[in-house]
Image (cartoon, rainbow over all chains, first blue to last red; front, side, top):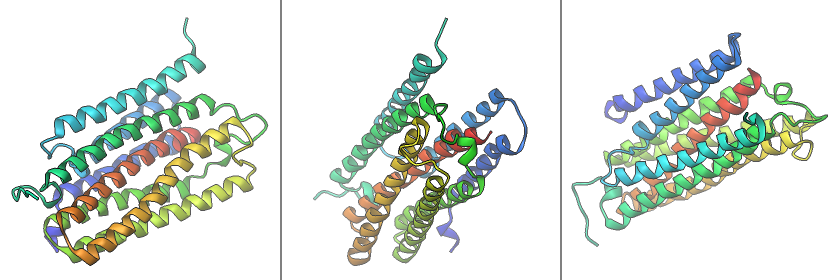
Length: 94
Length: 198
């Protein structure tokens, strides 16, 4: 039975629950918008890295260089799309 | 077919290895797809006109339950892949079934939530905010729905054929898809719900 629950994945699961609990602080504790967004950005991206490395085994295959550069490229495009849209349509610049 | 027995079954054939790489490239494209949805949502979230705003319709408990369900299902599909590498078919199928049941639980909560929004007067045509909101969350929900059927068919194949390089490969690729959906949900949970209720 025990060999079915590898420590690495159990710890990963516990850590992902902890990250969710930390993210919930922004709901239960009164804090500034900037601090809240910082907490959310950190917990969300750490959670994403955790899934990628622990559960999706992104580093174990011999194609891992290709896999990770493709994922980071996708993330880069997504981040530029999101912040570019915000800059052009909401924030503006001086 | 040439098999490399030093590798886990899902990587053992050239075809299998390339299928996995190809699926990762698909995930890269999916990241960009959700990037565009988030970009529209963040641009339009303040434009609720005379309709309700996010803070007025979001409720913490159903969203939190959905998060726990999906996080747990992501863990169990990871355990299913681990059991598959131990060649333990019974354990693998059990974890796989738990994953699909948790996924179905997630989906029913989401359907309940959509119903709730429509009752609160936040249908998809009400404002730019509701359109962006329901399109973003709905696209994720559609992925989960598709995943449930996909997972079910893979489960049937594993039950019938056991672990072969093909079924192991399909199961592993399904697990990648499922973990990815969990990651997308974490971003929805953080930047749509928690940010909206902050």
